[in-house]
Image 1 (cartoon, rainbow, N blue to C red):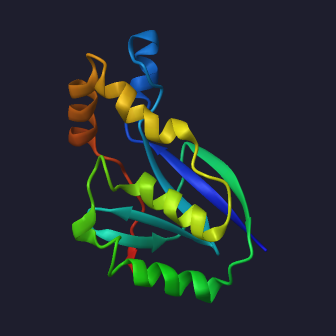
Image 2 (cartoon, rainbow, N blue to C red):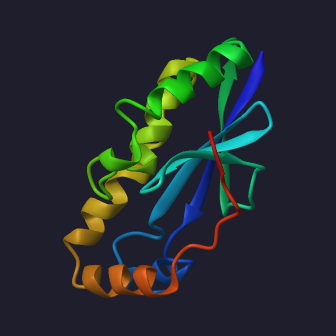
Image 3 (spheres, rainbow, N blue to C red):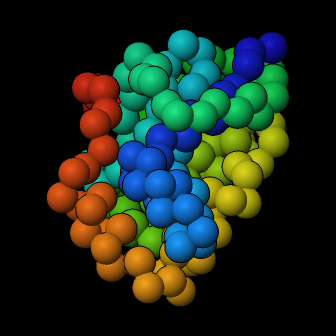
Length: 148
């Protein structure tokens, strides 16, 4: 059995939280899965993996008994199908949907609902465009990634 972790990075870098009650969410989450000593992510360049980074939040999703080789072959296959780089959509097919898909395959707990509802709640607020502009301008500092 191997532990599966959900790594959560705040794309707003604390900006949403600093707004206090003015902002309907405390963070806008980018998520990844850490298993077998590597962090697996999905973004506009497709599926990548690297040594685990330093997220703002870590959640243990459970233990998997999926063998490492089976997992790696499964993820490699996804790169050329439903999770190809060209399929990335920041709202409908993103890192959070990928981590949910992988957690289901590994047979562990689901990604917390707050990860998915944050953008919807933020979209309804007057701060939506400002937060998106801030994230776009400042970006998310992430570790170097390796292609599968």
